[in-house]
Amino acid sequence: MSPVLAIHGGAGTMARASMTPQDEAAFHVGLRASLRAGHAVLARGGPALDAVTAAVMAMEDDPQFNAGRGAVYTSAGRQEMDAAVMNGADRAAGAVAGILGPRNPVLAARAVMQHSEHVLLIGEGALAFLREQNLTWEEPGYFHTAHRWQALQTELERRRLAAADTRDDAAKHGTVGAVACDAAGHLAAATSTGGMTGKLPGRVGDCPVFGAGTWADDATCAVSGTGHGEYFIRWAAAHEIASRMRYRGESLAVAADAVVADLLAAGGSGGLIGVDAAGNVALPFNCGGMYRGRIGADGVAWTAIYREELVAG
Ligand code: ASP
Image (cartoon, helix red, strand yellow):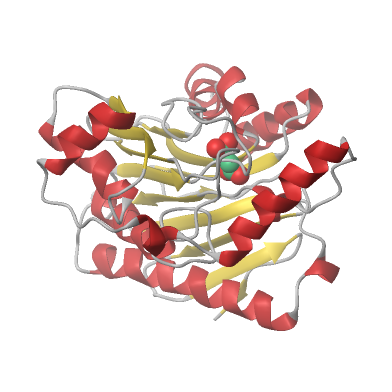
């Protein structure tokens, strides 16, 4: 089996005109760093689960992306993060929702998977459990970025004026995710997010809801989604792809395209990444762009932002 890893760093309307060439270049650099972190695991024969974790950690540490450092703010001006991991070989799964503290929320999700009897822990209870785990913690200031804070102020002002929402989605939300197929043909998915700018405190998105924004099953596919989370939950987006493959015999590409089209028809913008046990990768989205990339056994990192071909970097 030739291992492969795919990632996303959020999807949205993303007008090319609103980004400078420097911004674009910086996103490509961030995506490549994530791809290489995941590839390093796969290249030494490591499991898909470790590869997706490493890839997501790289983007959580990068303040450009809405996960970990650089997460967006709730309407109350706090950051509440969601993260999930799932292992396709045994459907082991772990997730956290509404947390602030662990430097890498994806490692918090792994701790839930590996060291608790549960699948999803939230808020204060999650933090109490996580304090007993061997995780690196950060003060709130570590996670702060001026551009996400400004995005909240803009959104609160827009609401106060009851004005139309004209901003790029990329400024309002985002998510990071990774899917991988390792040399043994096992699949895994990981997703991590700050959610949506100005979300109500306590709102949980699709990322930690298994079958919505995150899914992995060796029999079908591993999927990580990004976009308007409420739609991904209501359409059980990730699991719907697995179901179409399982019961209708559709390929990953056909199933993923169909689900992304269904989301669009319903009013849910976004995209997703998927991989199957043959190493096929799908990266569909129904909006202007999706930060995305893939890397195979040769170690060449391919990335793209808009509706365009992936470029090698
Ligand atoms: N899906 C995320 C959420 O709803 C946001 C995003 O991916 O843009 O929390």
